[in-house]
Image (cartoon, rainbow over all chains, first blue to last red; front, side, top):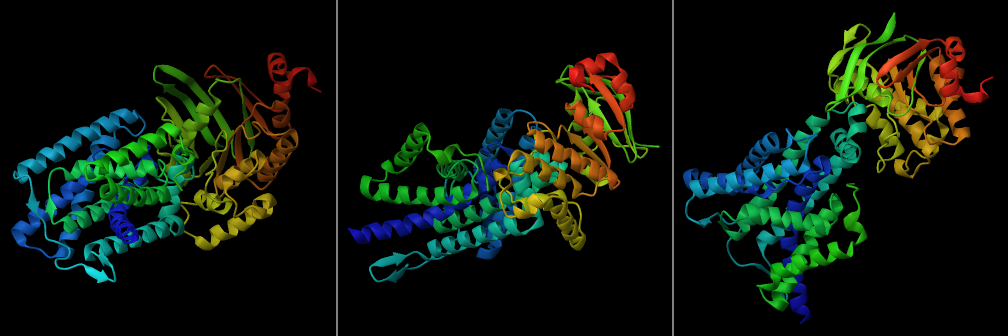
Length: 290
Length: 239
């Protein structure tokens, strides 16, 4: 019993690390723009497809594929930013969100066009037996995922609290008018944060796809939903909250799958979000991002 | 020669023109005060000069160069800093970080550090609270922080939008003492103020703006002699 609990928690944490990364990217964009980017996941999917194609045609190595994924996600992110968010910077948040939904559809159609089969193989991060430690097993790719997530969080923290660019990002998140009055080039900060968020999403996307060993056109929706869910669980706009929300989501899913069955896994997560929103728990109504 | 010249500026929110052709000048080395009722366009004018709002028409000349319609960060680079209405400090950042944000465009680290020390000398309360989050400061302390943050860019022209708003009388005195000090040290100040009594003590020139138009321009003497203004802004307490 206890062994199951521990093993499930370990598996849940690994999945949660991916969710945390997805939520971090989502939260960064939401923090500076105050707009939800529904095309966040599909842009990540674009990067993953670019890597899958690169692998098919050139047979590139793991590290190269990771770079292609990240570059593809940033490129697609820039496309989304130019088309959906740059024109609606001062205008309607709904217009920007609907526009990002339209691009979501573009990315999905593109994926179906380029790789018409529903499911494609993606080179695995690690093939072979998991690491056994006493009664517990650790998947190597899960360990890589956890390590990379920790590294990304630490780098992001350093960037935000120790660098000049981070000072500008926090200023824009907290008070955009005052940030521009302080001499910060706000549009430029927005574009860079968007690129950074897309890159973090690309890292998450690559690790997930390379852990699963396959890629489908559902990846975009999956990444957007998980990122959104984890961001909301942790409190809209809070970066530490995004990490905690991601880990919590991973744990909740792992345990509900084990104890209630795979059909209940997603239902429980959405039910929890619904209950938390209905109960108006304090951390979910806070607006601070740092 | 005037440091700032606003010429026939029209700024609109959609179809509603908040400024309907405003012209005024601020002479170098002076304190110039803009009076006017709520909704007259005072904040709109400040936001237009600082580049937050784009004028539909007209020119904003700083030292002879037209800066109208430039981005706010470019206008900061040209030497204008605005202390905005309601202060707008960065609430979750420390006092020190707020000051560093104010010096964002400056790359001379040593000189910035010196200026931080200078601000701490001028505003001792900020020094005491340098590691505290700005959102935890009192209204008066936040106002001082907003002024200090604006000064960190070493502006040629300091714009202040109602620095006394919502502050206790003693704190207002303190703010005006600082304004007088800054002026004595050579800063040119363009001030929006509802508190005409306090403004009369420090400003050398006054403009009155009503319904988007400048309706009076003159020195403190002329202001005090104007019957209409006296009634509206100085009331019966005028000595």
